[in-house]
Length: 180
Image (tube, rainbow, N blue to C red; front, side):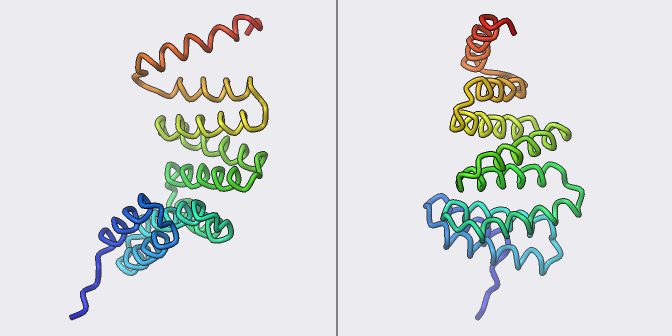
């Protein structure tokens, strides 16, 4: 008896494999989930699996496969008018470019993702992308840019923790010293 697995079960299995850092196996499960979702007319769910595949391929340092999966997901989200999901994929393209050492391209993707995520009120995702941009600026030796990006990310937090409030105050010191 052949039982066809649900898209959710295949996705969940892919997530488990991803958490176990079995990235190529995870990508295969996400591809299977994508096919099931697509066959059932669940276009957005299918595109999310393409994005998951891209994440898996990026972690496996399979750049071409990751790029193709992210571009596939981006095109679908764009056609659906799903700005938040497209912004997430663009952030993932930034992480891919960053992993490849294409730092200027990564920065462009992160900035575009932040703009899109902020435009639809996705504060948590924008904050995470600001953090990635801050790390990238540090890699580039751009200390002020790193601080600025990190601080911009902190402003996205609706209810900052005590730690976040302390960090925000600490970031005020260098700005005051340089007259900002």
